[in-house]
Amino acid sequence: MIAVVEPVCAGLEHVPINTSMLQVISAAFPGAPLAVSGDAGHLSELANSVGDAVAQATRWRSSRIPPRRAEFGGRLAVELSLIASAARGAEGATPRLLVLLSGTASTIVAVKLLRAAGRLRVPVQFVLHGAAADLSGWRSRNPLRRVTDLRSAVAMPPRRRIQYVVLEEAILERITHEHPRLARDFVGLPHPLLPAEIHRPSPSSEFRPLRVGFLGLATRQKGFDVFLQLAERLTRRHPGRVEFHAIGSRPISEAAVETPFLATAPSATKLSRAEYLDLARRLHYVCLPYQGSHYELTASGVLLDAIANALPVIASRTPTVDRLFEGAEPGHCSRDTDDMERAIEERIVGLTQERYAREVADMAGWQRSRLPATLAHPYLAATRALLARGPAVAQ
Image 1 (tube, rainbow, N blue to C red):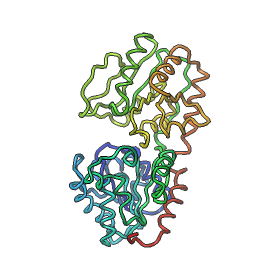
Image 2 (image 1 turned 135 degrees about the vertical axis):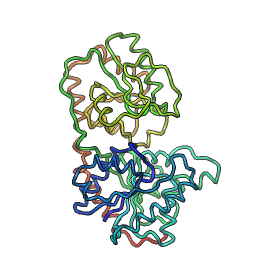
Image 3 (image 1 turned 90 degrees about the horizontal axis):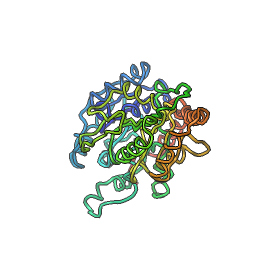
Image 4 (image 1 turned 180 degrees about the horizontal axis):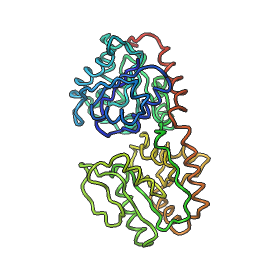
């Protein structure tokens, strides 16, 4: 049995990535039952999307997870109980592996405290996507904050039989370059796609209006303010020839803004997955105007949605975007906002069917390499290396 814990996400949060990770694990260990613990609403969404074969082979264990805004201490207390329960297994079956689908510094500390106390003997994998950004860049000078951040948690003993799975190998390369002493604890895996969501647009000869979209949460960190500026400038210069669509929702924490130049404004509530995909597939391009350093080390779910639907991107440079454009041209990799504006305008006034077809084909070329069945082999190899390590003792 393989125990899987989701200690962060509730409801619809990260359902695509968690679903595809369960499919990768299941494909790597065919016949091995899964026991998945987490928020009841999230487990329901996973059970409905993971596929009948995996769903029926899985024990769904509704569990209390920490409140979304809990501080380190509040999270740690809940996670100690959550992880210890998962490690004990169910119905007399002891897990051979414990996989954490996400987490924070407190999650890692909980694992290591249980390990040091002898209450957690199985090997542990920790999937890093957004949290990887906390391994780089600025750190608080406050020693109390430093001792509870992700870098301290990863470096904290015991370190044996704990493996960090970094989604996107370009991000892994950045992490191991900055933290060479921790390199043996990290492995890379391309961000998996859901096979059921693979789609390729029909050939189009009509690009008037050209439809450019911003996907997901409309936040400044993702560059939504830049997207609004592009929409205003280009819509004013080319009325009727371009449309800008924000397909997703506006988080409560973000202040409401006027969107007169958007053909589709962010929803006040979270879209269903089916509605989101239906709207996204009407676009010609996905715009990724990422700002700041967060997405330097964060696997972008929106970029994966673009790959899954073979939608070319006009994107800010990040390690993952750079890798996407190696030897291919699935849209435009932008140096800065001005370059992004020029790239969109160039397509407004002169996009040809031949060029667009090449961009779509280049984006679609990434699909097969990210399917769970394809990723099962490298994931299995990484997991076997973890299982082969010595007993779980402090080092």
